[in-house]
Length: 76
Image 1 (tube, rainbow, N blue to C red):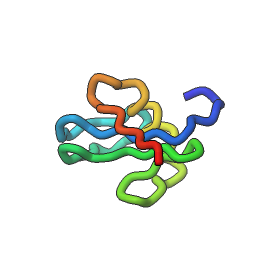
Image 2 (image 1 turned 60 degrees about the vertical axis):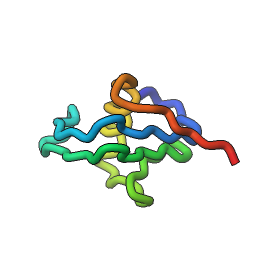
Image 3 (image 1 turned 45 degrees about the vertical axis):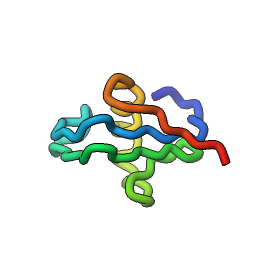
Image 4 (image 1 turned 90 degrees about the vertical axis):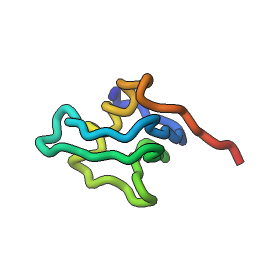
């Protein structure tokens, strides 16, 4: 991810999977429909921000794999 701030976006994982996120040593298990929220450049899952060490790797993984996700950004 470049140093630009990404606006508010929501991505929903199409299918659950167990995967490695580049730059993170542990395996992640995601459920079908898992939502990834980017708010003011911060990645949130389950309503909570990810720890600082996971922000960039998970954001890069989500943005770099558009075929795995449905963009579900809502405008209110």
